[in-house]
Image (cartoon, rainbow, N blue to C red):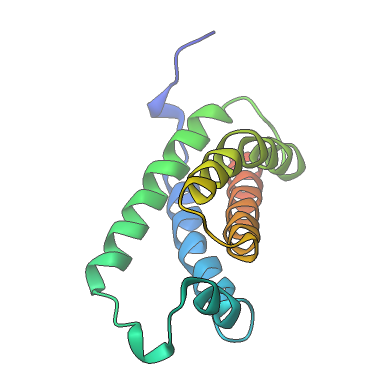
Length: 135
């Protein structure tokens, strides 16, 4: 295996993917999509939610970390479709099984696992499309 080359990374693709991560999360967990079932599965009410602005800062920074290392992983992959394929594989083989393991031990509801896993899959597909297609 060759070493990852940070100098070859497309910083703008990483920034766009990180911003898109926030947009996808905002939409996914909105009341128009999965916000209500997500809150029900967690036992939350709208009035219970009062997130600190720091949550958004950390979520964005974690998105930057994920996008950066996914971009390193995708070096040499050409095209949005190929990037999406790799992104989907990463989500289905690493991210989602790890997340589901935690949910099982926490005895979370199946509906919650599906909502969160679906979000992760969509994010990784989007990351793959952007990072694979914009090199």
